Structures are given as structure tokens and as C-alpha cells.
Figure 1 (cartoon, rainbow, N blue to C red):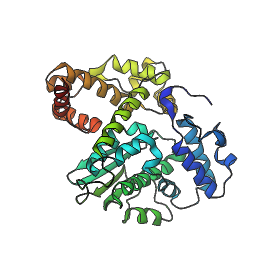
Figure 2 (cartoon, rainbow, N blue to C red):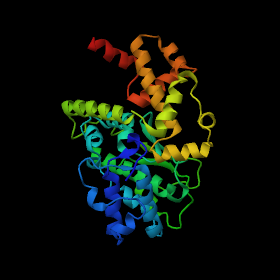
Figure 3 (cartoon, one colour):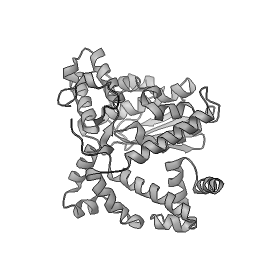
Length: 342
């Protein structure tokens, strides 16, 4: 098995769940893992890792064999549990509240090795989940979106023991012949064929209620381990490292996909495909660069307006929102932590 970079390496939790899902539906291990280059006997070995391409190929095999089953991705996603995700899952389970767990999840989302671009945001007492599937291969796109939405429902159940009430759902996928799996999952009928994948949940009764597994000491230790793992993962090499280096060189005006592709003498389609093969994207690399530079600039003592301008934000409020999305806290809170440590 080969991999383009360390950044593309995933733990095997998701692949093991998907393999078992295929076996439970009557497929052989060889059929599930065809063209992945994976040996099922090695998946449980400590430290064994796979890359995004291999997980995509496994999903493709499942879709080709079982795609006639209604809500296939939903069925698979509901098998995902936080305990399957190692330190990232334990970090969430030890948080004091659902609100803090969501902040933690977003801050270290890369450690869950998502194939799509997932965002969780608060709108008052509502939790809004959006999934950008534009970078996914078309033949597996619907399965992955359905799986990711269903797994987020499963994760919330792990935290609070129930699902959050869903107010509205829009999905980009075409309306299926049998929509009942989606209606059961959400408790309402989604709008299919929409321009975005978006789920709005009412969390008013749950956001700040203490979680049963809350432990300040465990949460802090998990957070430190997540920080170390994330730093290691972001030590980009391979093609992603080349792209990241070009972004770092222009932090105030980060080049987009077209400019990066031209600089690398390739089409934007090839750029997206090669980054996807290493488990990342232009947007994710841009966010990494902004986040890492933000911490450096905040530590320097520059006013927030100058920090935001240096990172390409015309309004300081936009920078503050972005920083909260990255870290789960504001730049002011980060500076206070730095001050307290001195």
C-alpha cells in the first residue's frame, strides 16, 4: 500500500465499519476491498493506516453492490460511534456540555478524517450542519453525504442519549424513489434537489445541559493529545505540501484554485483530484494556513484589525467568526490564555 503523504493517512476505524457493513449485507471481504489494495487481516493492526483513495474505493464497491437498498449511506452512518474515533471521540465524550463538544468537534474535525467538508455552526439555539460535497466523486457523493449526516446524528446520541429535533433539511441529491429512510432519520421530509446540504436542529434544551461523561481533567488531556496529533497531521509533505507552501508565501491574499493550478502548470481539475487523493482540498489548506498564522500574529500583540487584514479579512468581525470556527473560542479569549500562562 502506498500513500502520497502522511497527511493522507487515516486510521482504519471507518474502513473497518464499512467492511463489516458489507459483510453483514452478504458481500465477501474480497468484493468489499476489491481494487483498494487492502488486506482485511491487517486492518486491526496497531498503527496500520489507509488513505482517502482506498476508503473511496471501498465505498464505491458498496454502492455498486448494494446501491439498490434505500438509504444505504444512512444505514452505514448510523453504525458510527464516537468510541470508534479514538482520542477525537473521547475528547467529545468528556466535554462538559453539548455546546463545548460541538466546538471541540469542529476544532479537531480533521482527526475524524472526513471525506467531505463539514461545518457545524450555531444560529442562536440552533445547530446548523452543512456539508460541501463539491470535491467528492459523483458516483459516491450521495452515499458519503448521507453517511456523514447519519453519523452526526449517532454522535449526538452518544453525547446526550437522544437526537436533536430537526427543523429543516435540504439535500442536493435527487429525490429517491423511497424517501422513508430520510424521513425516519430526521423526523421530517427533506427538500431534495436543493442547492446545498443543510440540516437545522433545535438544541435549546440540550446545548448547556451537563453531559453524563463530563470530566474536566480528561477533556484537557484529550485536547492536548488532539493538538499534538493535528500538528503532526498538518506537517504537510507530498503534493499538498507544495500547495501549502505557495499559500504560506501569500497569507494576505491566498491564491485560489485557478491561480494555484496555473502556478503548478496543471488544470484546476487535476489540482483538486491530486489534493483529494491526499485527503485534503484547496479550501482546507487555506484554512490551515490562516489558522496557524493567526495564532502567530495574535501572540505578537498586533491589534485584531491588523491581524485580520494580514490574513485577508476586510472586516475584523469576519476574522473573529473564522477564529471561533477554528478554535471554538475568540481571539480575545486566546490572548487571555496566553497572558495567564506568562
